[in-house]
Length: 256
Length: 203
Image (cartoon, each protein chain N blue to C red):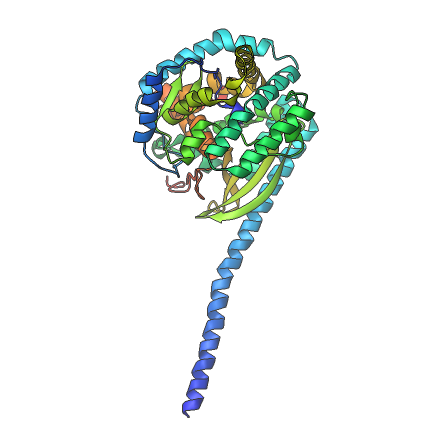
């Protein structure tokens, strides 16, 4: 499901604005340390601005991303191969983040997964590790920040990328910079960026029923996308308390 | 004499302890039974869903099947009322029953349509527990070519019979999502519940 969420994501250009990063990091610090978040709380102080970005992203999806993604999807097999290949290229960064998170078991699981898929999955085109029952263990620097005690900050809708938070955007930018793949030569790095971009388009096609229902069939697609992203992200970070997401419809249900 | 009373009190104490244990154990056993019942309920729901997925029927038939399952096992009136939010308090009985009926159809079409993605997959109940005033039944959905994902059912017997009232898919709360969605639809109808009910029939 993780892949379905950043429905408009494309890799951020490698040249990034350091002041933006600083702002994001400061934002994340100010957001404070709250390891357990109420899954139903939404912090969105710049909602009017975010809604404008959402309208822009929706227009971009409708005019450019969706037509390309849906028309190139075919029977979905090619899209799945691109998606698996891209995920495998992202594994060195996952392993680095696992190490930064002090999660040594996950780091070694991801190393094993990377080895398996690279060797037996034809360089990562086939995800044999998942077929063998290994956990996906996807991670990112946003999760590393979470483990280091940073709160999620506030909700952000990022142009071309879609739903995020101040912490997760900072994480995305750091991920681009610290990716071990960057040590390859320039053409290879560009190739990897191209594959990741193609995978975003492929995923938009693979999950088009679901994404279309959120973007084009909701009465308020902004509110739906925000709720989906925040709740799914908190779940992914293991922030659900025991009674996470408990909405009690029996509070006063039969009162007429 | 002294010995006797002490024996007696010791006996009484033992009896009291035994009674206390029974009194304590009874609700525990009752709770355990209901957790099992909640799990059995979701086992049935999941069994029904799996057979619909496996039937390979067309979309219209799948949606009809989903509506039947939803009406049979979910506490639809409570879900509908909760999704409508504060406006439910002002609505008349007739308005609520029309809204609930339209809501049931809307949910069935919305989620029934997504069944296509489940073809070739299945759901399996893995655990159940008591949380606060309700039961949580945990299941895992395995879809073709996807990593397994987490599906949690919130079950309650407060309506008089055991029914599920919420579904959490990979952390995403369906009741919260529908509250936001129905709230937005009601705003579009300027707070008019009758117009919302009419709009739901087409949604």
